Length: 483
Ligand code: GLN
Image 1: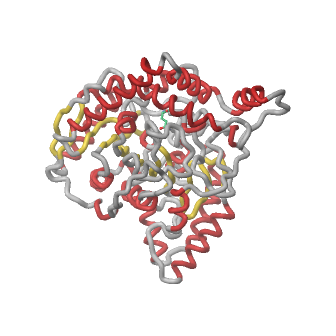
Image 2: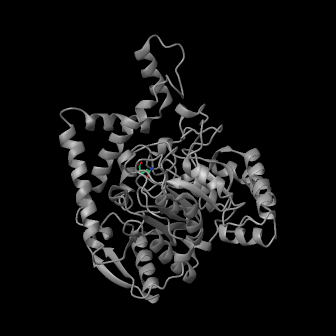
Image 3: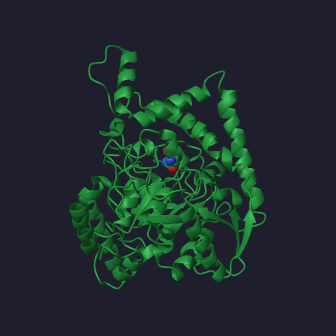
């Protein structure tokens, strides 16, 4: 039963082959047995899950249907869940129980999804390896000595290991697409504003976006359908109707114009990944797509711009964790300044502290123009590059990551080495565009992802291309040994 996709689960539940309660119990037992190897969950919510599963079974018995009704999922531990610990992977929020549900959590619960637990993540979603969590590193099910990617690495590892069919993630600079690529999943970062950020603990508000991680594009369509939509409680949510994503999956790719940026194939890209990307291009050509070389000339500036903007926003967002209102408070503070200093010094890990310092520096008088304002200008140039490219092509294709999953600890002493891994993903966040990563082969037994980018609100096009590719390839069906 643990091999079933969301789409197969929906059919099985509709045909009464099994109940949501049976499925939920099976998966909870599997998590208890296998997760100690992976560390992909921070909290399990067994009682809630069984209660939601029974309620979903009752709704089905009453004639209700729906692709998510009775479907087991998990939430990255930065989506607020009422009465349940919402830690953001940090000691700072280890004792924090959210007083309300995030919009995404509430919407999926209303659609009948069953929450099995909260998944491990890099602290405050800062990272590309899932090693900065207060709850310890997550392991990659394809090789337990390697990282699963981050920051949604817990969601990715759990879904890749067949502990559950799908999970939510968030993507500020690649944290859905990159762990999807490194664990052989399909992951989608929607257009900025497509999915509500209400109740999603903020890292960099102008970049953060929630989205689905699953094994297939078909399942991403199902989960995104449950997550997307206008939310008046999020001032950056966009009031645009949500199309039927599952209905878009079967469109023909005949004549689809795919742009491949020449800048993607620079020296930093593992040549074996480059070969797999070109193989995926050949596959899409067979389905009728037309390939065109394009240029994204400002791509080289993306990492420096992102690593000014994201920390700047983080330094502001994280100022609320002051030891006074909620979260960690140090013992016996001598005075107010001591309370702030020690609560933040003890509650935040080193990577979070590094980002707060970089961000506060970039925003300070005298440096604002030189760093923050410059970075915002680069951001506009990057967006303009995409707008020019999308005049000529329907989709942009390339690698999701320059390398396969690295060994645990390999980049810990050099934060910049880890930042360079984000080179292909962060431009979509800077421009607010939707992006998807899908499985495209293996290097040394480790999965490789191909990334697709589309114009604003064209999530359906991304899912269509990925689904057609998955109908003709079997990379996405490969299962890690031992799981
Ligand atoms: N690796 C990037 C960072 O650390 C992206 C993280 C994310 O998307 N949340 O900022």
